[in-house]
Length: 379
Ligand SMILES: *Cc1c(COP(=O)(O)O)cnc(C)c1O
Image (cartoon, rainbow, N blue to C red):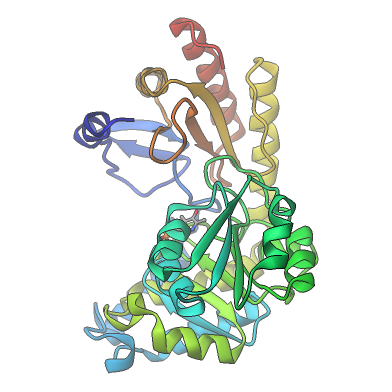
């Protein structure tokens, strides 16, 4: 995507006029929504809304201060305690978003003369955090940390290995057991960004480390409250020592207002719902299997291990045309081009949610097949 193309995408923004969900109102139209990260439907869950309203009544709409300057509400302390339990870490620290969590945490952990090892397809917020740190960054081929094993062995001083758990544009999962082994062997810190794993992966939805039965085996787990958890905010889980280090050094925390109480309360409630309504997660995976199968039946390549199912189109202009045609068929799926993905790998990124009905998913998969055929695009 060139600058003018990305400007075009901005000018033709589709605007949500309802709650995000499997069905939503976009630009005045009732559509099947396949863009939202609201995997479990928690953004519109009655319990989250109620908790949020009650917190606003009690604490107001804003903390109106930064963390160290009086901006920590009692429910934020509670949220940090619950997040530490959720991630099986000693302590946790809340940021205003996953983006600012990466931006603040990575430079707080490693400095100029030190070394970072980062997956080629890591999220933009990890990339920006690495740049800000000033450390030497070794980018390894996607999912293949062993390719830089020699460099890992040779690097002097502090080393950090950092990876997405679920890659946000491809839906594949990082080789975490291998990363844990490498980090141990070469005495590196391991940081995993579980933005798309939290709430979804693992028997209790605790994320990628639970999925691999490796809870407690990496130093820093980062997450977002803005995806499956249906709220907004970011966090890290780590030892008390690392949390103290990051909370006193992360500039993206020191120089910004803390999250408003309403969203903090929604996040706390989301953690309770995750524990008490496992059926949401079951429905999500059932829906995911159905949608993938239906695409497969239509001859559409839909390789993915998670509810993020990219449909590779190639050219950004083709992806855009397909997205527009699908919208006219009442299916809302955004296209993703450069700079989100490399040039030539534009795609429709579909995301399945527990809120979708099986019928809507069947309809959407069929519509994707028809749109590709009508436009003569090979997917
Ligand atoms: C979405 C995402 C983020 C950013 O989280 P926000 O809370 O939306 O700022 C960070 N890392 C990864 C891997 C993500 O997918």
